[in-house]
Image (cartoon, rainbow, N blue to C red; front, side, top):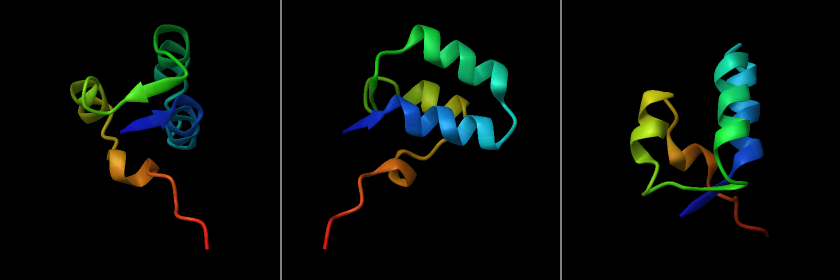
Length: 57
């Protein structure tokens, strides 16, 4: 699964983690692979399931 980087940046900024958001914005692609980057997401205390696209009705 891939997550849009903007969703992660928004979550980090809501938590006041602006420096981490800046780093992530510079270093990561626009779409973040949750498998390849599972360690990073874990370090940032981010659950990939939170960012899954919601099904349309």
